[in-house]
Length: 281
Ligand SMILES: N[C@@H](CCC(=O)N[C@@H](CSC=O)C(=O)NCC(=O)O)C(=O)O
Image (cartoon, rainbow, N blue to C red; front, side, top):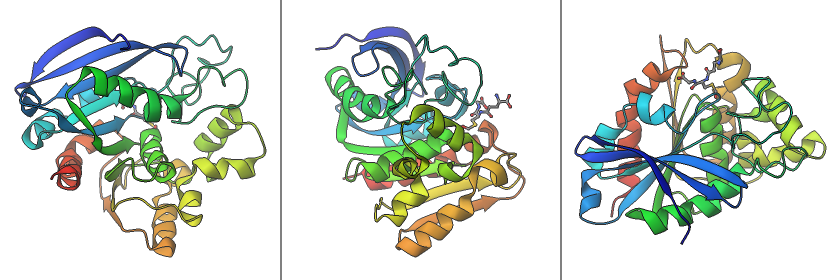
């Protein structure tokens, strides 16, 4: 059994919010993640909601800022909050920009050097971490949902689309919907991925929908005062792709809300309820 080191634990809504580290063989470096165990986990394994954070975030950001634990405690869901990239990779420019490298792993496996060895977020999240969670925590990994914000919203959409059947529920706050068409995605994919841009479609939610991939009914919330709305997020592209594909989507646009965690806090209860409903039974 792989070792997991406990870094912190805190009582929270009668459950426990913890932060942990393990030596990841996929990443080749220590990786950190948060786990919130609701009170129901004292009685037995509970369904899991994987929560993917955005650019510049780490394993603590969503756990500290989103206010999700009270709702997870109500519904009996385990929250898992992974770090957003490997750390300390030694890649020369991995700390140069806030939208690439450390804190900006884009939830994919890099194929281009010098990133290919350590930037393996998709394999870590889809193969290694579920095994670690199963071994060390009271989780039902066969009852899992995924939620994400911004870059994490891109991660939630694309991981669910690329791994059919792994997630019973999917939702996002202000996701990067069409990364191959916007600067954040073009910079990340151009840096992390070998090959010409046509191969990037495998990590683009809009393109994946166009190729026939489907997910369970989607819930997406988007603030209309989001500073990244038109330049980086482009929810209308997801809306078009879902309509063309017959993919069920509830996209809610909210006047006055920006990109930050106050927006997430305002609607997190409905996202957790969306997942709890799909993960029940
Ligand atoms: N550092 C940047 C702002 C970075 C930023 O807004 N990050 C977002 C996610 S953006 C897409 O993935 C975030 O969630 N930040 C954490 C937070 O606590 O808000 C800048 O200085 O403009």
